[in-house]
Structure formats: structure tokens, C-alpha cells
Image (cartoon, rainbow, N blue to C red; front, side, top):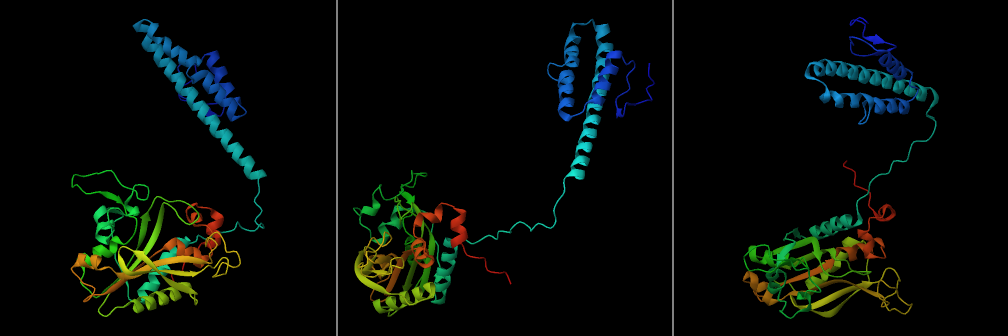
Length: 372
């Protein structure tokens, strides 16, 4: 019989046990002599595990008479506590020994150069949108906003797109299942021109607004992705002419690209402008405006790249705001942000913007502007 006031045995603590049997003494000694954490864990499983010896004894308590069950249960619980404390104490000793060994044998060479610090970069699309907005602000344009989930009415009808227009077909537009009972058809907007319509409804001229945001179309190839970004601009002021539009667009491109560009305006058709035009620029990749040198895949071997669409706002669109082209003429234009970014930064494939390659971001990402 050991004294209950002697809680330490062989270098570890355990609960006071009324009577330590030979088997218990041997087990405690075995625990203290465990040389590794793996060996210690093996002992723990063999005694306290699901099928351990002590666990089995605890399971057998229910078979004992009531007068023996209480005394036997108390004794087994005391042994379990002692074994648990002994294992934990030995585990702590082994961990401290292992740590001391590592500290004595492992060294850090402080003369080695530090790991390279990689500074984050702004995604080229984000940088392009910021630069586009800055250029248009210089020309007096202010931000206007519209929802990305739009009605068929604002996305098509009020922009003078007839019911049979190809853009309204399912293969070109992401239509949404009705999620309310208002009877309207909802879709993911295919253009930021919905900003123009909402501005005409809520503002009185003169005004110059720009809308920059996400748009969605069913398309995916070298120069198209299902989600992309557009910039729209609309200027409605007395006396505005087609020549004013050409001048504003020329200055906008000069501010954005920072150089004199070889461009051309060619007649085109858009339902929401009349007259309408496409503005093209010389392909910066193959460096030819005629295609005589063979061209490239980006410009489809023509030497020219379609840059943006533009034109005088159609009278049917102006009528949304109760305006007429005779009293309140205006022009509008729209361009893909990805296309502008590709041409400015020299990105050969539009899909690279969305594939999250670290090498792409290192090459084309823009360094953040210092807060100072």
C-alpha cells in the first residue's frame, strides 16, 4: 500500500491509487520507459483504446453484483485516471526531448538571401476600366449605372431593337426563368446601353454619361467570352453633331492609348443610332492596315480591328425621355473593355483575362499606385 500523498512515481504524476497491483506497477513503468511517441501511442491503444484491456474491464462491470460493481468501478476509474496522467506526462517529456534535439541539431543560415517578396498587381481589366473612366471624366462624362439583371424592355425594346432582331434569340442571350409574377421577361444584360435608356428616363439634358460594367452573351472564342465588360458613353447637348462625336472619340482614344492612332470611320447599322458608324483602328499586332503583309488571327487577316460602335442617338430612343433629335440631339458610343485592353497592353487572346494564370498577371498586371 502506497501513501495517497505520494502522487509521483518514476518521474510522472498519477492519481492516488488505494492499492497498486504488480500488473499496474509494471504498466506504469512501461509507460515511463516508452522511447518514442509511436510506442507510447501503442500502449495507450492497448490499454485505453476501444478494445483495450482496461476498456474491456469497464465493459464487464455490468455483469457484477451491485455490491461489487460500485467498488470495482471506482477502482478501475482511478486506474484509468492514473494511466491517462502517466501517458500525458510521458508524452510531454518525449515532445520536449524531441524539441530540444531539433533546437540543438537544426540551424538556420542567417546569411542566406531572404525569400523574394512578390508584390501584388492590379488586374489589367481593372486598370483598363480605371483608365477609361479617367479619360472620359476629362471630357466631362460622369458615371451612370444600370442593373446587370435587366428586363427585355430596357435591354432591347426601348433601344429600338425589333422583336425579330437576332440578339433577342436564345442562342445569343442568357434569358432567366421568371422569378416573380410581374409578367416581365428577365435576362442578363447583353450591353450597357440599358444605362442610356435609364438616364434618358430620369435626367434632363444637357448631360454626358458613361456606363462601365459587366455584360453577358452566348459566345466564346479568341475575341469573345460569355462574360465581358463594356463602356458606353452618351452625350445629349444642344447643337451636337456627328462631327462632335468624331472629335470626342478621337480625344478619348488619344487620352486612353497615349498616342496618335490610325483609325477609320465606316458606315454601319445599329438600331439605337442613326446615322451609325464603326470606328476601326490599325491592328497593333501585325502592324498593317491593309492586310498586305498577311495580317494575323486577331484582326482576321484584314489589318483592321473593330474598336467601337457609335452614332447619333435614334429618335425612337430619345423618345423614351420625351426628347426629339431636333431639339436635343446627341450621340452614343460603346466598346468592349477587353478589346481596348488587348490593344493597349498587347494581349493576343481575350480569354487570357479570365484564366487566372500567374505568369499572365505578372506580365500584364499593373503596379498599384502608391498611396502617397
